Length: 143
Image (cartoon, rainbow, N blue to C red; front, side, top):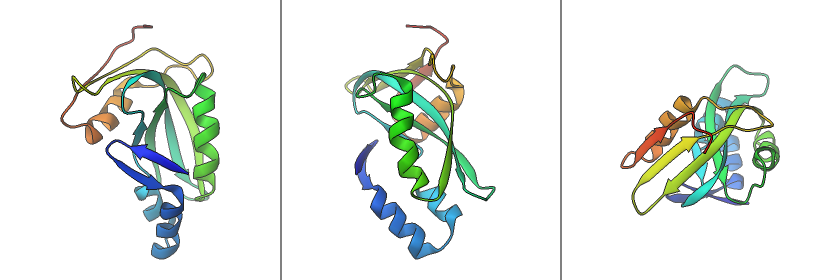
């Protein structure tokens, strides 16, 4: 399984290999990308808390794609892959993103019926670390 990560490609198999090579789950957690979103368009997204099973190390990550009809479809795709790496996931909420690659802008808004509204300010801070040359904003607007 391959995922597009902002501007590079990585496979879950390579992350699993890193985990086995380094020997610590905290290091494996650190290798999980903070952001995986579609390269352009308007789509649903979720904010996840990823935690090492039976450990204290955790971090929040953002996942979004046009292929998800509902927010839970994103979670259903991401959760098994992260569990296979020895992680636990909890969805903190969702919303939508408008990613305009040409104008270098991302707008975060809306909410998930299933998971509630994500803390968009947290999502935006994650996005800014990956898309540092973009204008990234959020609002409580529904559309």
